[in-house]
Length: 202
Ligand code: MN
View (tube, rainbow, N blue to C red):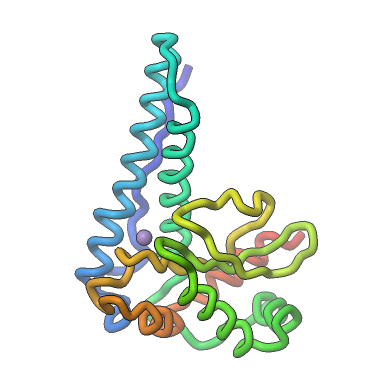
């Protein structure tokens, strides 16, 4: 049998200072190196715990183990998507298929931006706002994700996410989440979000 594969922390596709002034070096570094790393370490730890219990024939509290596994894998996947849907020279408006898809669903970019902003600002506690895509209807749909729970709509694909956990913005914006959400629009990597959408359409 080949060796097991584990999760690993991806490098950021830009430098720690490159999203300033919207996200500071200190904020981005702690978010990536500490918080995201903790989810990677957590997920791998549970996989090892499962391996060990299987080898030993030991019992596990499956409910607790799977909840913790889902939390950590979800955190890892969402942060990986999040880093890549931002870019130092981002912002502006989308183009291509994404632009037409947003136009068709929301009636215009400004309406989409308003709804996504409200989703991000109003999400309760530790949460995410996500632009997702329904594979059954070919429609983009905004959703809120509690903690890291990405099991809400299993067939949906995620096009863009915004982390609104306090750990994502507190050093820079304190309790002013709405200011962080507003700043996010200056660093959206629309080319990457569009690439994700195009990869889904056959
Ligand atoms: Mn985070």
